[in-house]
Amino acid sequence: MIGAGMGAMAAAARLAVAGHRVTVYERTDTYGGAVRRLERDGFAFDTGPGLLTLPAVYRDLFVKTGKEPLEDHVELVQVDPSARHVFADGTEVSVPNASRAGVVSALDEALGAGAGERWGDFLVRAREAWDRTRRPLLEEPLWPNWRVLADKEPYPGVPHKRLLRTRRASTLAEIGAWELRDERLAALLESSALAYGLDPRTAPASAAVLPYMEHAFGTWYVRGGIRELARAVYERCLKRRVEFVFDAEVMRILDQDGRATGVELRDGTVAEADHVVADVDPARLKVMTDRPLDQDGDVRADPFTTRPGRFAVLLALRGGRESGAAHRTVVHAPDPVSELDFLSSAEGDQPPWPTVTVLRPDDPALRPDDGHESMVLSAVVPSAVDWDDKGMVRRYTEYLLDAAGAAVPDLRDRVLWQEVRTPDDSDDETSAFLGAVPAPALAAGRGHYLHPANTTRLPGLYRVGGWSHPGGGLAHAGMSGALVAGLIVEGPEFRGSQ
Image (cartoon, rainbow, N blue to C red; front, side):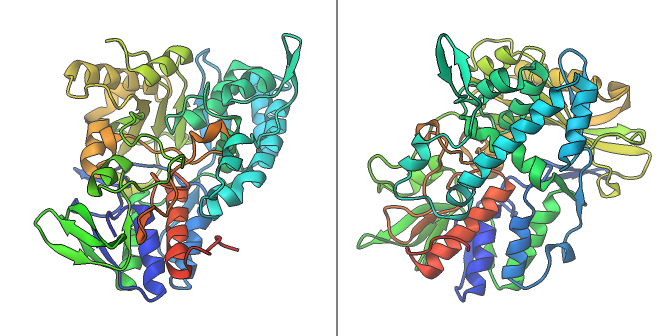
């Protein structure tokens, strides 16, 4: 196993239970991939994902690898409201967690009569897209005839007459403009895609499943931080006798007679294996083997394509968290078009204000005492920007602090200290090319939003984690682990969970 990310560990635990001897080689000194924690002066911060959707993925992992509930190892807390949204015109709305009636009522009250009904009707259509794509995109290995997923749009858009033609939404932005018909509702919709660096102007309408997942299955927090979930999965692996070797960088995947036979480490050590599972960025995987890993015409983006990354400011604050503060606040960009243009091109010396997410967990484990608070501000940014440019880092830091100041009273006066993390930090920790963040797999869009299959042209070599099918996000990484374990244990005839 190459890499100790969440997908790799999910696969390792399942393979160990099936009787395989599993060794994980991790380039850094810890497990979890992007799911990490920074601790200082009694404060603690998640430096990767801060929330979890679809906890059933990890519940299934713990049942299948030990017949124990996940909740015996971590404390899951449903976040309510799911998020507070602060729009560019100053309007605010707190969206209840996993309650259609509650969401409809909240949107009507905040945005005007009819807004809630339009959103509720959208969720019904999004559910249909979810039902059509759930198995092939999440629970089954990528179909050999994946073009069926690429060519057909599963979102049942409302007919829209335009220039004497009747069309249905083919992008997320068109859903916002034609069906929601409110810039604030459109911003609410598009923020779920933007969080993964997807441009709603080009992302397929099938991306409607992203807000639907949060609505249908809830938004969850792990007490102590999401890093606790990584710890629990790591300890599950250890209990199943998975061996971890840290500070062990794999440089090359060995093959003989057309089959993967092991790995070679930086120090020259060779480890033989019947199967090799790689939880790494495609750019890094490409340099580990000189063999093509996909058939001509298969789903595969250029591994060196530039993708957006994540910029974060970790704040240690004096003063306790005010009563009733939302766990998550999204402060929407005042000029979303400029934000998206810069995100896609990274051109210009003066970046526009980004959409900013403020995470404020009410968790004693993350602060020294109740007279302090830890907070994480984050935004999706172009990973190709020169993050050694102190001026650029300073501008983004100010943007995030200003945006958060609109949601948190007297924020700047409360700051004891801050730490800034750029995509370069993610690159150092995960080896993802330029610190990019993988997005979940989506149907339609001519296949550009699918990910490479878990199998490769090199027998015995498998891909797992956010850069392979079914894509990025904690839940999707866990699903990739289940798929890879099934393919190794049952062989190519494996068709997914039943």
